Image 1 (cartoon, rainbow, N blue to C red):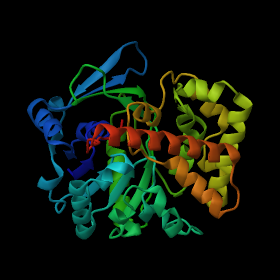
Image 2: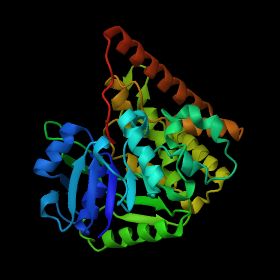
Image 3: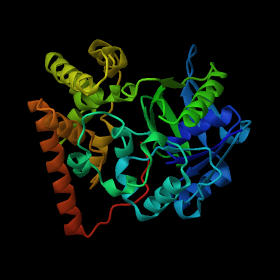
Length: 358
């Protein structure tokens, strides 16, 4: 049995459930109210059935492993075998979370980032990037300063999940049950543990969502073309549209944006086999009837969101291959954030902390 620490109890509860099914012990890091609820009632994750209608409901109290929860200040990372970073990048700017991150780095606990936004220590593993020029894309770039790049890797959070309206924050519904795609660590022992966890999860083939480990560090970047083509193009100057509409209302233009982002990944060192072809993505996007989490957050007044759009644009600027559509996406998101921040100042609103990955 391994002891796994997961920062983020919303999206993080999906991987926590898969690990607890395999007999591991998981501690979720979240707000006080959510931690109290999880410790009192456990977690519930609903998966779509693979070969039958309806859903499969998995309750943590019925699993061979164990899931509990705590607030950041109460967590001691030493004694944990791995930390999973499943919060949105902007949430690592929270003071309590930053303190926990410093303790994780000091304890040299291997970190699997389950994020769309790759942490700076992971980007240091990729050749040819000037990280100083990318710092402005992060809410708190200095939160990552003490991490050893050899102990940080990235997984593409491809499965889509959401908290259902009207239910407790210990409930998660999986909408698109694809697999997590993780790159290996540079550290051999950390990679061996990651592969063991993946193999343990594979022992339950009847429940979807697996952890797949890939030798190439570029496999998790396969999400970048999807995010630029779909998720961030859901954001409009006055509102939002579904991912399906963002992609399919002008399929030729979407293909051009997507293939440009693929080419950018290849310029960094990816091979086409590391990435997902546009036609396969477009087919999946046709079923995504909701706006992206970024678009929903902006429409709800968020003052900070993950800025993968800005990061991709900044990397493209370094490589002298800027795309006009990507530049336009960044400008639209910037304008929406400025509007939300101005509205918050007028209303004296403070953004809540510890919002976890939707």
